[in-house]
Length: 523
Image (tube, rainbow, N blue to C red; front, side, top):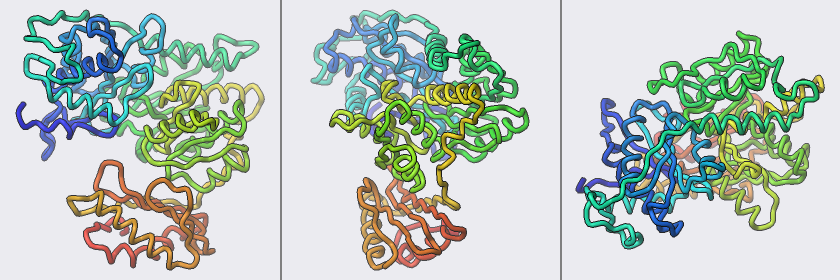
């Protein structure tokens, strides 16, 4: 594997690559050989981090429904076992469940790996890594890739950081034990007990969701277990649930709560089956969204508002950390209606989670970190972005609301939502796109300072956010640089009809005068 560029596999705090051939201009770079080395490198990384011998380490691995999953998973297992560590093969699993193997008695894994590429196309796959401290960060991923690059074909470890693992040849390695375990049932039972004990129904404790029809859309990913292993034991009627069977071709819709087609599908299912509630998961169940009994989305700002209301019930005045593109109406709802504090931070689920943890360490109470994408993490649940846990919190409130004769969405009755919103993705046609993107943002900032009714919003942590205060606009826009791609996403919201177009028209002279920008999205 000479000249193989391991760095291209890094996608922030994950590893992602092309695992299946057949898509033009997308050569395979996540092969079984690469996966095997990554499994071995993770063991080496754990040895250096935990100070334990490889033979004393226990790891767990699971996968989503992707076609490449079984082969790549076997390769990772082989890499772990070849390093001398024992490994639990959990089969089909969810990303949050993989973390839970590190903190659940009886498993107590030193590390865990989930094979998934979230909502990306069927030919992609990837690896997410966990220890009991949580998901790994960007520097950890870089270290693992460096270790993998230093491995020879017989899995000799040459990294100076893990000399204790060095071996003369593969034959001298003690092969670790491989065992199949059913952990998704254990994880599901944890959610069942959480809902039972928190609802504490006076008449039907074992089945607090009895009398509720709840439709689940798993998008043919790994989330189908939630209907059979969580909802049905709690008494819910799951008639009308769809796409629960794993299928790595994702034939019905993209398994992504942000996708308009996917959301339209679950909304339609709720209406068609006259359900009380709808649930949609992404492929690996670390993200989710919901639908109310009227078929209306509980997504993005509305989902954040609901979870914020729930968190602030038990933790008054707590801080809620969100990503940068949340609306002004959400800020007003959290701070004025709920009495909390809204801390709008950077895009990226790891960014908001890390910031929430930092605030707590600094003495500022923060119970929730959540992105508009559906990644939501609560302090009470290890700050784990867990779509199934987030949905379970909503179901607890749904059951309580039914007992009290009210609606779940009464919790967000005062949330003011924008009349219009739009995202325009501006492509940067330059090789050094990050530097150029920052220059574009600087030019826009100079332009904004010349506009008498536009104000740069303070305490903004990425790009430039501008409040547009004229009666014809009454909104805001945010221009930022994408985390990984040569793109400048432009988000615009307005509280008046026609306001988004008005703001866009005013931005056009500035942006159109800048070279190397594809502004076709304005059309």
